[in-house]
Length: 347
Image (cartoon, rainbow, N blue to C red):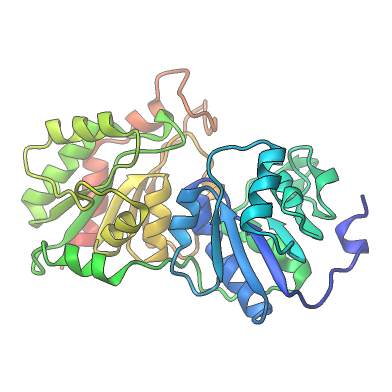
């Protein structure tokens, strides 16, 4: 394998295939990279592939010409057959934004002539051009993911435009939700779930208590955002709340409705999960309750709001399930979150 910096990439490409990150929050943090890639190659046909949720998240952005959802987790032969059917053009350049082996294998299965990615996950033999991750004293160091994706594009002469995260919300969905809301009252969203795992979740009853406090003290109308497989969390919040919560998704939940709902908020309260990064993309202030994960991955210069975090001797552990007493989250109280939210709701 020839290192990236000793093997120059072409100055132009007719077609580019970008493999999106799997996690929705990471996909949101990849949007600056998509934008600068489009600016650098305005005539290229840029296709983004990835899990259906990631594709739905970036839908509507003008920086991508086509979306190619990859259903499930197919093997290499299945991926090759899928790309042969749905993407037969063989892109001149493939870019693996996630670190996974599967992402590099997908670009190889798609027949991309050049494949660019970080040297992670034992996948370098699948890539034609590689870049080493950020290393300090021999250890890979956490980097804000948006910057990591931008760094991967630097060899293509894609310069950061410092415009931050960007998403599109459907105008009709936004207006439909706004018609149900009182324009004279602040709109607060709460997002108590976390697809990463329960270790990232603050207690549902505490979210309910904060929602009640904001309704009583700030006349807030509160939207409840939950995703697939979060029915138990949703039920726990609804059962504990004394004041009614608004369901912005109705009986047709979707990524499009999630984006529209967050776009309507004046403030979002949530864990370190996808809704946080969607809010950043829309310029909505966030009170983020952060537990077991390193803040270095998500510290955004474009975020408005506050991150509530307690240093504990066992963290950041990066584990999806807590193996001790979850004190990184339980030490953050209702008063802490309500006070932080109140600062952003004062006239």
